[in-house]
Image 1 (cartoon, one colour):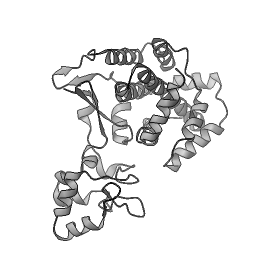
Image 2 (cartoon, one colour):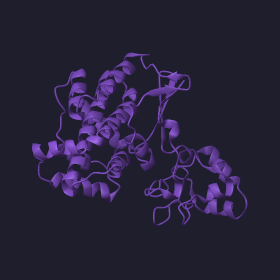
Image 3 (spheres, one colour):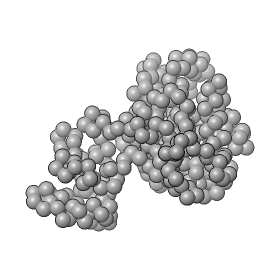
Image 4 (cartoon, helix red, strand yellow):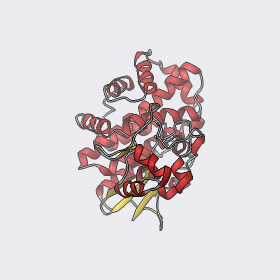
Length: 315
């Protein structure tokens, strides 16, 4: 059985229109099937493939000095697709930004917030996110882990409550009194992790150095952002859906839920920080903040594991 959020099949790559092309700045590994295909490709394209593939330690494309995939042309389109069609793509290129998790005999699919277009789809969704299978709505009560995840998501979707109240209610459900860190302390923890994008480093540095926002400013922000407040709900639901069911045991699941709740509070406070600086926060601003967080945290196994361990220590 395959499970997916109701927005999953609506995703379409926007190709050359993307401001943060996934073929730039990412090492692109090549699966065995496509490696064999590339090695058998003849002609000038085959020669170009051989010149731009490194086999060690894992087969991958050699990025240009500008950190671009060697087959990403000046129009930000893929020369492999142009010459050979979509079937020529290796697994990671074909599937990105999709992710897949296995849990008790079924597969859960989703879209990662590291992709700006996926971010627009997820954070811009006004209706509550529901999980589907190809047979209809998904009843995720097959085991205690999924039932617990469903109850947390239900709380996060209680729209008569503010996002802060929902976070607190979810903490109560988990048997926790409060979040272990304020957002500035959390930013300091994130700064200790591996960081790749200087924009992310600068954002954390500026936030850590900023003055504490007083309650009046926060209340003004909550009033101003009301039309976009559902974005914080969608961010939280996405994190819980993606990470909770992959836990090793109940305590690990709780740590992952805590990661999701702490990260949502941080996402809210980053948006507040930006609003305080510029007196506005657009949907594109929220998409970019989410993209930075996801790219730097979720797409580094070392970083996510470090944070899961951190929150495990607070249980």
